[in-house]
Image 1 (cartoon, chains in turn red, purple):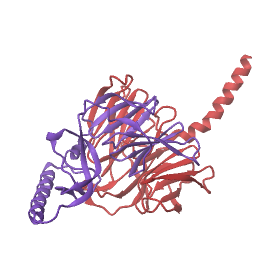
Image 2 (cartoon, rainbow over the protein chains, first blue to last red):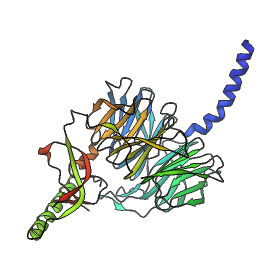
Image 3 (cartoon, each protein chain N blue to C red):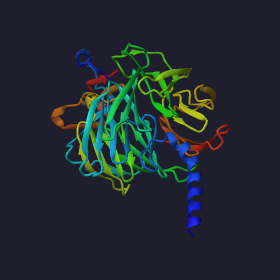
Image 4 (cartoon, rainbow over the protein chains, first blue to last red):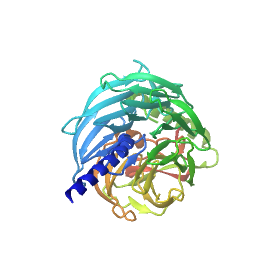
Length: 257
Length: 185
């Protein structure tokens, strides 16, 4: 009986390894919560992290009736996105990507600031980020809402090597139409390319993204990959695809209005 | 619109006011201007009864998206959150609209929804998604939305100016306006 239990445990552990690799990039929001790349809050156990325009705040949420703010720090300005990756928090802002490491007390500590456009902080772009295997994929697109920024004509995907937290390294850039949210599939990166619909980018070689296919007809803003499902928020519609076969993704349907 | 400089803010308010003054003078002999535009929603933040679950409604401008279990949740910017039962992804069904004026950001963990209503962070019990309840509030977490004090975010057009003497600003809604004095460009 005991041997049977050991055998079963080993089988289950082996079986679950593959699942955990696929889900490696999923923010650890508990067993099933996943957010799009424009998310600005996330939970990790009993801690809630939140970014507003300028700061990152840390809350203990173990008692919902009495949440406690543990920390608040200035990050920069025009902050847009927050994600978690293996004990790190990556924060996207109009000019920079910030990497913070979560300390044992749950409070983040800044490790680096990567400037998208060099020292000139007056140039801005909209920039959600996803990470897998020490590579950060960042979309940059024209940032219309910021009046203090010079508008930059930059519509691209950038790949940064973040294995050295203190000094991320830009590896490559790929021009797109107006990229916004993005989500990682197995070998595809799904980029919401605004009026360009959905740009499907091959990342079989993770450092060499290649535009494979573009699906048009909607104004894609943000996306989530949940197992074999690609879920897209597209202005007035919710659009979904079956991505079991990443070379032949299937339209499932949409809700509009 | 986002901006990061108080001086820019002053300049912008000043130029809006100049524009208004000129327009008012120029149009004072003409007919009433009746136009669709944004109007402030006023309420007392101590009473969260307006944060509630409503029947599904049309999408206006979908932005942030979250999924938990078989449900998809999407922010309709400044209005609230659509709740979609996605048990069958070929037939997703909108089941509720959670009315949260001023909402722009959120996440969910189990039975708690963390969402802003303009400047404040709300903790909302969604154990019964048909009857959501505010559990606690942490005020002033979104100071960047100071512009909510002046004009609706992500909106270009005419609006009814927010008047602090009428109450706390909880968000904006589209309405038919008569001679609106404010405008964002």
